[in-house]
Image (cartoon, one colour):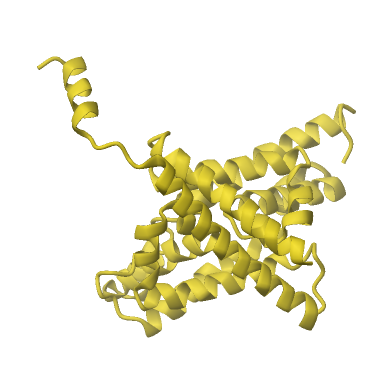
Length: 151
Length: 121
């Protein structure tokens, strides 16, 4: 069979994902996770003197803590099967990727198993976050130096 | 106050919906989707557009992974402003550390207290 024919056939037999349903589920679950995050933010602002600008850090750390509990009892995976990107895109999904790798590879030991595999799934997020931040900041620095924009 | 909760839900939901579209329509793997969103967050911050979203949507903008790109860039730009070119390198983790350090610490603790049942990822 020709390659083109095969691709056509493959497209034909692969069931189309239910776009609208998937997007709606991702929207609702992702929105709810951020809603919980907002409640956590409010908690830190009321009781710990954080401001709107600084509350992001403790909020993210707390969400990752929740993620550890849900990952450990096996619930995060089930949420993920329902929500798709709704549970993958929030920082809890990043936490889940790191924590599940840590738990899964524990049997190989803490150095070779947990240590080596911790960022097996989440490493690409760290890599592209850091590299893009580097280039964006570099470009901004050059633009400021040339007097095109200001800080 | 109440409005921040409403916007947190909607903006957070929209960012996740964009992620879902990248996966379904764009046929990207989850890892590609998350990497793309992080890069988008970094670029938005470079143009000064991410902070305004945080201002009105709160956790709707700080909880999705886009905020990771935003805070990395934010730290790098803030240090570059203070110390020049070298700040681009040294400022990177100034603001962001919490997401990564929390993931590492809770990953370690999780490995200590939970057993793999083949259903954790």
